[in-house]
Image (cartoon, rainbow, N blue to C red):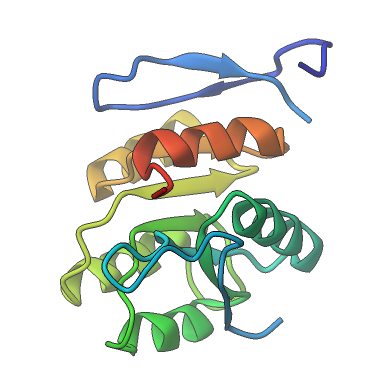
Length: 164
């Protein structure tokens, strides 16, 4: 682990329990290193964050772990990814504050389009009110920024295990 204090709490409403986790471009799609087979494709994760460096880091980590990844820097870009019917989305990683909407607005739009996959909300604004709104909107996990990428990967693997 990375040592140091544990400055924030990771919240989950679905039986995984609360635990403490250490702190620490345009829409495009990248395949994982283990893309699976036609019968068993790699799980596809949509990462939406306007912070390009953070988004890049998350995309690289997930791709290395064997996930197929779509990315977007705005809600508008993310909606274009969601509107494509050619590939399913297995999980959503959404920033709370985007330039053109909130991650919760985007989640609502995804649910209206029929997406039922788990959603993780990443936020530097993790007030109790924000967490309550997120859980009411159907977010599975709220992760406070800054976070450790390895912990985020473990969370994603819990919700959407990579396929062998």
